[in-house]
Image (cartoon, rainbow, N blue to C red; front, side, top):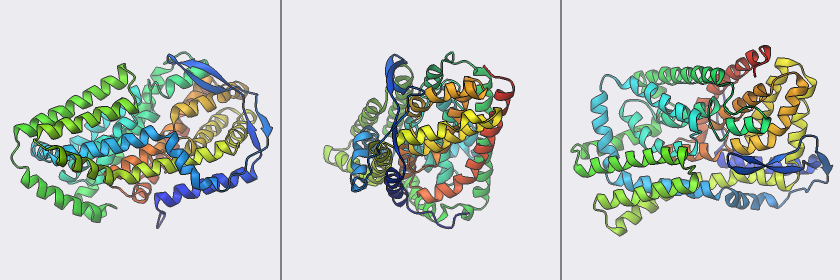
Length: 462
């Protein structure tokens, strides 16, 4: 087991340097691209067989400007993280969260274990159904204090929403941002293969819930077994002090929690029906912060100070998003991103059956490290993987599943994912502690994914 994992900034900037080195070592290359209609819009996809070599563009001083370009590329996520952090700081300052948790803990006394399966199933379902991903970020600000109050640790709190949504996202049966785009680009009927995909989701979600429940039970028995013990002890003491202050549940607390519930419902409806994304959701949470502050009688100055304090607490997460985006910028500007993609994809046509499906899965794992965005990765890889599946003797449906499994599970551990580092920053969980805790689970996901790909190959799953 790793004794010490470097700080996430060290990891990501090292990857930027490594990407720059690749532009000096690898030959340049590019695919021709065309626009296709996807879900009412258009998306640029590569044309299979169109790869051509070209001179690379070695990157040098660009490693220092890459984070800036990363911010420009992922600016919406950066602003979203800051808005959510500031808005929840306002809500937290009202005392409504502490008061609500105090009341909920009293109601759950003796039945605390039910929180894990119920909440995780809920978030996993929404990850599988409508691709909940960034939308899960704010919930750690609610579930981490709840988990601490119930005797668990902050890792369990983050797992309730973030981990669960990630598992559902990977084992999706509807997800319009990954599954439906990949099927459309592969020429596979939309939402086909639903039965087997539901089975994949049920098994993956069930095993993940069991893993977290076993871990949570161990932490309740021995809090010192948690890698977050020292950090959580300080937070738990502060939470207990605040719970004492929030012993009286006022009408203002109730109204603010009702506003929070309304925002959650609006977020789900807006994402599902109105196709809301980062900008709309950020505005929704910003409005929540202002309204809850006013309901609690905050003056404009106090409200503004609470918002800025929340932004200060989360600025590290916003910074790392820009750094992570810089990796892809260096590879693209150096003209080696398509070279890497072409080299990986070329392997599958030379291998038989199940092995070919496993290699496709491995390729998606590798690409996911550099391109965590599921929809972007689908546009880049599926036009190549679909015809390669035909050459390898496996169905295109299987190639879609290999993409799906390779895209989702590692998102919850890679430092290049803005959602991951943003969530951990909000949960105040150091990346290295989460990495060490989640790494064995990733081993389980790899074995599960390899197993899930066997039957589709043998049965020529359509």
